[in-house]
Amino acid sequence: MSFSNNIPEPTSRRHFLQALSASSLAALMSGAPRLRAEEPVKHPAAKADCCILLWMGGGMAAPEMFDPKAYQPFQKGLPIEKVLSTFPAINTSLDGVKISEGLPEIAKIMDRATLIRSHVQPDLGTILHSRHQYHWHTGYVPPQTVAAPHIGAWMARILGPRNPVMPAFINIGQRLEGVGESEELKAFTTAGFFGAEFGPFNLPFPDEAARSVKPPDGMDAGRFANRYQLYRKLVDANPRRDFMSDHQQESMLRAMDNAHRLLQSKDKAAFDLTEENKSVLDAYGDTRFGRGCLLARRLAEAGARFIEVTTEYVPFVHWDTHESGHDTVARLKKEIDRPIAQLIRDLEQRDMLDRTLVIIASEFSRDMMMEGAPGSEARDQATAKSDTLEEPKHYGLHRHFTGGSSVLMFGGGTKKGHVHGATADERPLVAIKDPVTITDLHATIFTAMGISPKAVYDIEKRPFYATEDGKGTPVQSIFA
Image 1 (cartoon, rainbow, N blue to C red):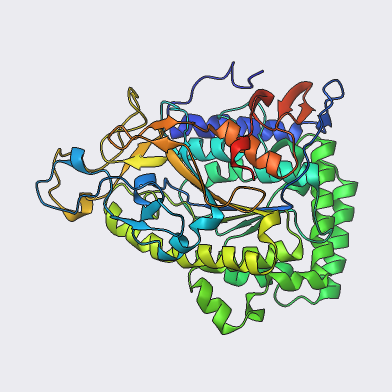
Image 2 (cartoon, rainbow, N blue to C red; image 1 turned 45 degrees about the horizontal axis):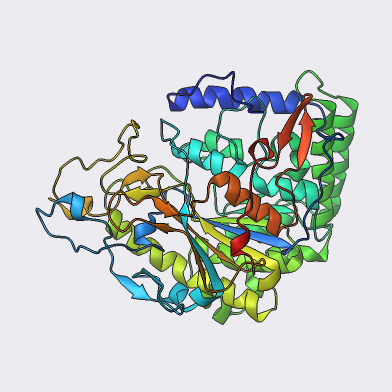
């Protein structure tokens, strides 16, 4: 059953926030989710123990990355209908498969990858990044009557930690305060109704990660432990059942217990990037994303279950390229190319890649001509409205496109050197072969991790599935 049948379609950011606030409050007041006894689920054998999601927040244009089309250099007066890609294609280590110029290191490891070129997203009418990112990360189109858990929270809840002191779900590189759409980001970067203990350990700045597992400045470990115990007593003695259910309160206390164990453990050294030598730091590059990839490798080694590393979503910044798209993407390629390739090589060298699923994805693609998909009535948010190129800042793919995007995967039981699906070579660049929806992509990811797409919990006496209505079907052809 759908959880959105009785909720009006949001038509603006304000309506979306109102709906999210209602579902977040419902999550705080909800009781403990319980496995649905009448629908026993058999989980598949796990192909991976750890999942690393490299998130290109803001809309990574597939024709500028992993699915290049006909290239047209900038020329004043060039009709924008002729602009399919603003970078030429380059050869890769996988015979016959090309990707976009500016990704030379990723090109060298494409023979280890599965490339999905037919990922599709629904046209949600009003194409808000926050709505599409919520959908991608939870599998559910917002708003919902309950707070939907992030896919990392599902892994934390069903699979548990690989290392009892290491957070099962870690989020690297995204600030949740002080950036545009922060409330929307918080809405899906949670464990939802599962409770705080299954939510993310947030590390917005990788270089500062070691500080997050130490007592605050000026407070020694003993004083910190005493304050922690006092806080526990205060919470236990003053339950706020008018604000938070017993389940949510107990889950928060367990989250505190988990954090306290980590602070007392030697495994907290995994958060300290200064333990790496200069050559390793240089290999990953001196950027937040590069450092995030290195931190992800260290945390995967230490036993984290799910790690998301993002280039950080900020409206009209990074991949949210509504103008100066070509120059922005050229810069972003330099930031992501080397660390992604180094992460794959390091996992492979450590014999970890086969049991680690690495995913590179974004909420949708981009096109020069159309918003949404053919036939969409979505409002065009691009700043360039001319039919011809007049300024370099308008050169680049800047309209949101949901008809066909790319997902790149490594390890986790996926095939090496495999391409799934295809998009048209001429506009509209829609998926024309073996489309993969978000529901089926999540089913594929969950299956690789040993979770049934039909896993279901009762929340507020209603079933809630790992994939929407339990209908996700894994793309079996991508597995080795």
